[in-house]
Image (cartoon, rainbow, N blue to C red):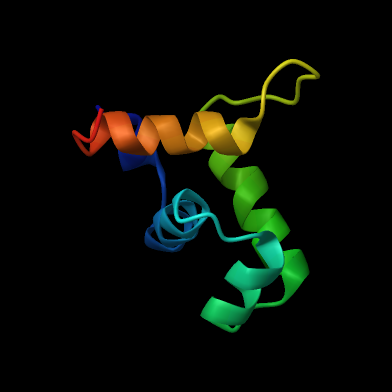
Length: 74
């Protein structure tokens, strides 16, 4: 099973916006969501992709790399 298959449609939508460089505030505006909702969705994405907080890595970048690998862009 692909890692992206773990994500809901909304989570995948948010991840694609992250990949386009959108901030959480920009994602909220684009999808007409509250900022807190975007934070919750991002946390869920990270959890489902097994990306845990670390001082050494950026989870947003790692999540985008998963997206690119599984979409065949890498």
